[in-house]
Each structure stands twice: as structure tokens, then as C-alpha cells.
Amino acid sequence: MDAFYASVEQRDDPSLRGRPVVVAWKGKRSVVCAASYEARKFGVRSAMPAITAERLCPEAIFVPPDFVRYKEASRAAREIFQLHTDLIEPLSLDEAYLDVTENKTGLPTATRVAKAIRQQIREELHLTASAGVAPNKFLAKIASDWRKPDGLFVIQPHEVQAFLLPLPVGSIPGVGKVTESRMKAVGIATVGDLYRLALSDLERHFGSYGARLYQLARGIDRNPVVANRVSKSISAEDTFPIDIPLAETEEPIRRLADKVWRASRENVRGAKTVVLKLKTKEFHSLTRSVTPSAPPSSCEEVTMIALALRERVELGPQQLFRLVGVGLSNFQLDTESPLFENGEDLVSAELLV
Image 1 (tube, rainbow, N blue to C red):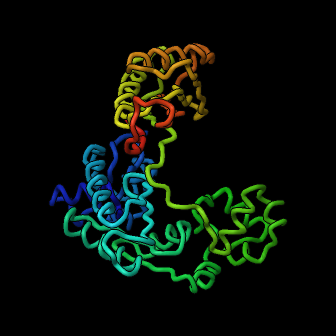
Image 2: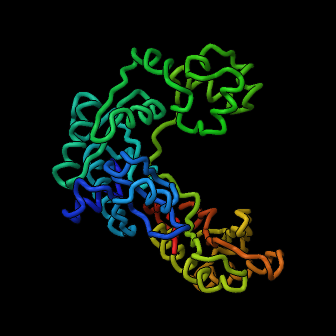
């Protein structure tokens, strides 16, 4: 989906259409959740500090995020996907892999399926989506970003090498700035440079990830589309307007515990592990976790466990904190308990106050 959160806001409020919209709370410690393409022209990007976005685009309209509406729009898009295939692997509220090797509508090619889905999203949801069509997930991911917004790009099997080799290595999903810098230090700037290196060389430089890079440089990705992927964790965080001592974190911990508990009930699987996350004013992160003998059975139990984990933080009363988070992880599989049925994946969202 294109600039998903911002596009939902522009769809639902005609006065925002064609204007630079930034989905974020205003404040020194808030971050940008999404930016419309009008705002992106000024350099505004997701995960950027809101104060930076405001400086780059003084005319930007800041809209607080409404994840309830975004989730509903995501669910509606998922229903459109399901008209075409049951093999849907959501990555987030606004992105998913679809295996349409065999599709429900009998369309002869994946390109036709992609065109049909994009048209339905436009007509029924009044939003736009970009699609990448390729022989595997790795290539489809790259292709989906190739003609954004509102674009469609197809990589045919015989075109893979010609398409891949000239690309910068940063185009490979999972190659971040740190890895890209390490690659450039050893003379790797493009996918073609990767392609020319032996497997042993890549493993020497990048360990076990070298084998994955060796395959990706050849357009090989055997990972299937996995429908109904189990969430690994659900979490929520608060970044405080001002740094606070540990003793003052009880109220936000209670609020966050309630939020993740309600989210876990939608997942309808028991979470075995409770996690408490803290970030000091110096930006040092620390976590404490516990796996009780039985999964927590109530919000109050999650809250009590999270507060107990707080007692395991021994940095002294003078230490100030800028962020607290509560999470649930290590979910039970359906086969572990007949009480739980498979549910939808949820996306955890950072909450800034």
C-alpha cells in the first residue's frame, strides 16, 4: 500500500488531499509513522523525528495516528487478496506476499492478478497499492518498490540477472546501512560485485549470512509464502515527554500491559513470556523477561509480572528513563492447547505521548 497511514487520512478527510501530511504526534520525542508523497518531496520519511519533519516541511499537517482505522483498511485489503488466493503472508498492516501460482479467479498470469487486485483496491477502498510480480519473494519485494506510488513492475524469469546485477547492494532487503558500509569496505558496491565473489569469500566476510547473499545475488530465494504466520511478539511502548525516574513508570506500565493484553486476546494464543523494556536518558536499552510456569491468564497478571520485572532493574534512584515498553512473546502454538484457535497477526506499534 502506498504511504498507507497518510493515504487513509487523505481519503477520509478531503481537506488533506494534495497536501503534505505527516502522521505523527507533535513533540520533541515523537517520530513520523508515515508521510504522504507530498511531504516526502521535502525529505520527510517514516521513523524520522517529528521535529526534523517539521523543520524540513514547515507547511506539513500533522495528524495523530489512528491505528484502529488503519487496521480496518488493512483488513479490507486482505479480504480483496483472499478473493484471489489463500496463500497470503502479511508482513505488516500495509504489506503482504501473495502466492498466485494457482489463483481462485482463473486469471492466466500473476501480472493479471496483480492488476485486478490493484484495481479492486482503488475502486473499493479508494486507496492505491503498488505491486511487484516475480518468481520469488525476494525479487517481488524489490519489484514492489520499483514504480511506487501506484505502480506495477514485473520481473520475468529470463530477466532476473539483467535486472539484479546493476543494482546497489543496499537494494537487497535486509542489507542496512551498517552492512552496506562493511560491503563497500571490501569493494562490494553492486549486486554484480556480490555475484562475482565465491561463496567461501562471502562466508569469510559475512559469516552464515554470506551463503544467503550468494543465493540472492543469483536471484535464488526458496522461502515459500507462509499463510497465517504466527506472531513472534506483541509489544507497545511509550516515549515520555520528559525523562522520569523508575518509580514513576507504574502508570504507563499498567496502560501498556492493558494494550498488549487486549491485542493478545485478538491473537487468541497464550503468550508464555512477558517482557519489560526500558531506555535510559542516555539511550541505553535494557530488557527484563520472565517465562512463568503457566501463560498469564489475565491483564492484571501481565501487569503484576511487568511491575515485578521492574524491580530487577538496579540502576539506582537517580537514573532517569525516556521510554518504557511491555511485550508478550513466545506464543503457544495451536497444537499446544485446544483452547486457542488460530487468529490474525497483529502489528505492534510504538505509542508516543
